[in-house]
Image 1: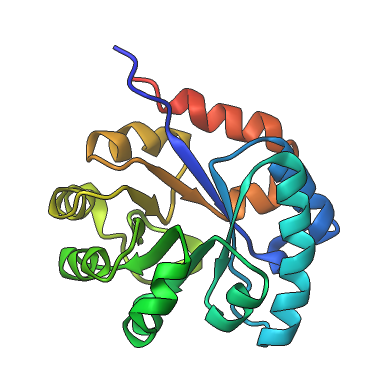
Image 2: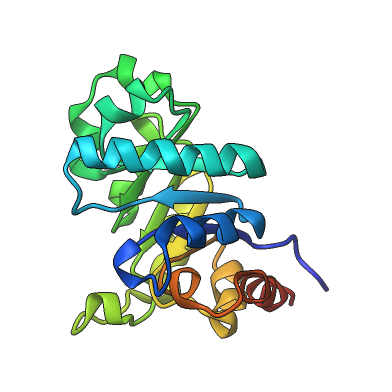
Length: 205
């Protein structure tokens, strides 16, 4: 049996890029993931806003959703339709600000946080980290059982993050996730089209 295709969210980290960051974004957008999340947490807001303008333009050209991250004011100024927030930020912003974004996501680390994010108006969440990853050295992944619990706790899409590769995608999908978040692979692979296609092949069970 072949299940529906796994949705791929590509999360950026320009520090991992081996080429010009915007060139890499162009290649990712051309490969047509579900969305690109412009994460870049180390940037101050004005620098982030400037970069976001350029990334939004690339995503519009390729008709790929650009999800801004972290900065509510910058996202509003850029007329962004999609925003991803840490839970601590989501809790602080007003219902009116939350309602601006037709796509609103949050990073969750428990089923309780997932339920809270849904109540606060999120249209999707990311859950992690699911498997061991170099990005979280020394911290074991929470595993597929954790992911299944989160997916069962809310009626909105859940995207697994952390240590995801082709061999893990079927396990993630069987736990109920709508898709996965990819960061280091998307930032460093030799051929983005082939890399994302390979991940999609891994979603077939």
